Length: 366
Ligand code: SF4
Image (cartoon, rainbow, N blue to C red; front, side):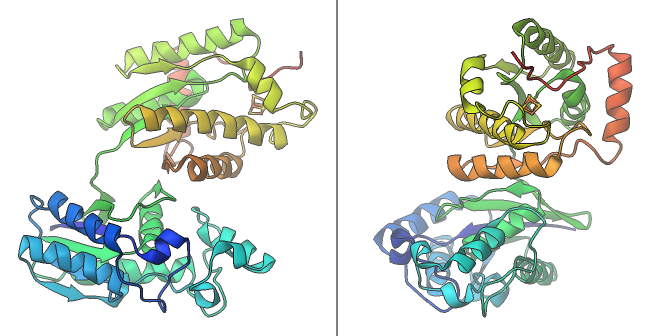
């Protein structure tokens, strides 16, 4: 059985524009811009073949769904599984008014990883509760006699659902739509990603490059590693990485070698141990630059192999990717490089392709 879900965020409200938390109790209608976004969304969905729309009962989602349903001449029903997350005591307020404790909860609650699943504001819902009801709502719809189903919902619901499907996206624009498929007993994102994969070296990226290319994923490899010293070592790793990309016919992009800038950014942290503060900044600098490049060059997500090596702290890489993704408003995709046989494949390819293996991470004291 296959079902196609087109799940979209409502148009803008005055509270969105003012930066206020809406949640469930504040039921603001769409503003002028929001109504225009709903019309645009309906146009985008015109040829999707949608047969019905289910909407969160809140005005902003329902008005958006109504615009779509009318334009496509299809029925509209409400479903509480897709209502916005309950933000408890912070609903109606702005971020600046949060207490220190509430700020801590907010940063944990908004974090796009599997930590802090049960954190919630006083009187509100946790990430786990929001995701669980969203998934049960989707599962309920599997028994409906429709093949293509629209869902009008909200940003927190979408963020946690996308995270569950492997995509970290902090910024969900009003009116954004995502195509999710249920097939062979699982949900997956149907939107074709164009991934920009940040690679630090051939040994860390070879298994991921081979796996993605065999899966016919649309992706390019980018080499942005101004942390590597000396230049001859940088060139050696770059050339090896290029060789792997040529073998699997994957486009290879090299960005500037701005080692001076890297040194400025990490100044004062020269004596930090590996996995310490210097590494956090090093990951953050590289990921942010690559996200900026991806944004300007038609990619839809950035991924990296910076956490593939067992010498690296994967949580540290993911935290920095999340920080960079938040600042650039560009999605980061976590790609499997360690589990599910990837380490075995990596070791096998290193041997088979006789890849050059460096003896240190990248930076060396001057
Ligand atoms: S040890 Fe590696 S990750 Fe850490 S700062 Fe140096 S080059 Fe960057």
